[in-house]
Length: 476
Ligand SMILES: NC(=O)c1ccc[n+]([C@@H]2O[C@H](COP(=O)([O-])OP(=O)(O)OC[C@H]3O[C@@H](n4cnc5c(N)ncnc54)[C@H](OP(=O)(O)O)[C@@H]3O)[C@@H](O)[C@H]2O)c1
Image (cartoon, rainbow, N blue to C red; front, side, top):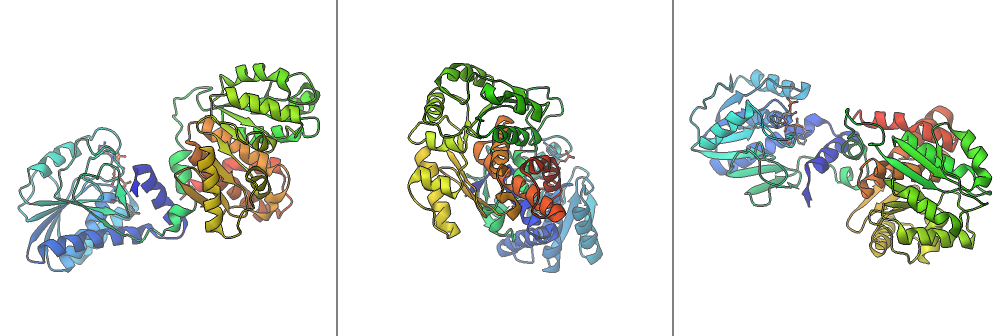
């Protein structure tokens, strides 16, 4: 498994959410680096440890403490004062041992056999700036052996960048992008396997929370929702509320004109696009396809009903659409056998899964996940199976989600969820990540409502609770 910087950051946050203290990870990281140095050089060698101001520097400070405690002569150079409370604490702890000289880096390094490069790790963004640029140049003139902590300082995801040329990289938890051609050892630092298996706030932080402060109207997602019929006028409204509260700029809702009035009355934010008739039929398709041209994601299904002419119209749309689609409710059945636009997501519950595959889901979660992934592979799409534990699968990845509340079994919550998935895709999230984050955040919103109100909350209230769920997940 080779991780991107975002994937690593997500795991780190998810580990904290699962109760692993950041301090424990830093302690384990520093000790692992020291062990690799001691294994190669013993205690007679001299070491210099170069520390940056972030957590990579913190790992270096812990490594220096372990090296000194093992009996090595160690000198630490600080390029900038610690920026985080944790790194500052590690510096204080190192100083309190009295065994290590800690100096401010002033452009020169003392002689040593080994240099530990703990300047910059996964926190680097863009071209390396001063003072780190000059320090990296100095490290690359160093005559001894260079051990980089986690990543060679300055390295980007393609392995390039203005970076340290190490003799060894002690990389933490898993291989990272860009390290493929470098001498590496991977060391466990105590991130639990669950941090990657279950969706968590880290996934939200790296996938959803990415908006530019300079963006303007329409840049953060346009969703088109095609749903509703005389039987179900509420479903497209709930999906629209989900899409809006998940942050999409513009939400267009196309419904038959027979239900135009209640849908229009439901929210002033909905941009309504009615078409003639009682339900979706062939005559509306051309106008809807034209509307879809300006959408970033189309949600098909909520409340459409199962009339054969409606299912035909959905099939027709799927043949023509080029934007990613989220398919829910009757659109799932209509999509059987149809080619889906790239990046599409199917959102069945267990009953719908049985209907569209002809097979029942096993109870055991691992087997369930395999069955869901088989469908994802067959349909070349993302599948979000709703349940007590949600399963999110793409052809190459599977994650589970266990947030949620028994109060979410009521009608309409699936419409909200589908709207949230469409909203995140429209805002630029990958389809797999959108489905993962939507499941996690809707579940989190449900948990909050359950704590306040028991099981009596409505699907509309679930949508209204989403912004708070996003903010609370960013606290980790
Ligand atoms: N929980 C843990 O203890 C844990 C777990 C896993 C990994 N880690 C370690 O922590 C590292 C990540 O720590 P971190 O997120 O604090 O980041 P970092 O890699 O230590 O980088 C620290 C800082 O460098 C600055 N920076 C970013 N881009 C730069 C550039 N192009 N030129 C110059 N400076 C730049 C940024 O600060 P400014 O805001 O000043 O620009 C950034 O916050 C990992 O690589 C690993 O070593 C720790």
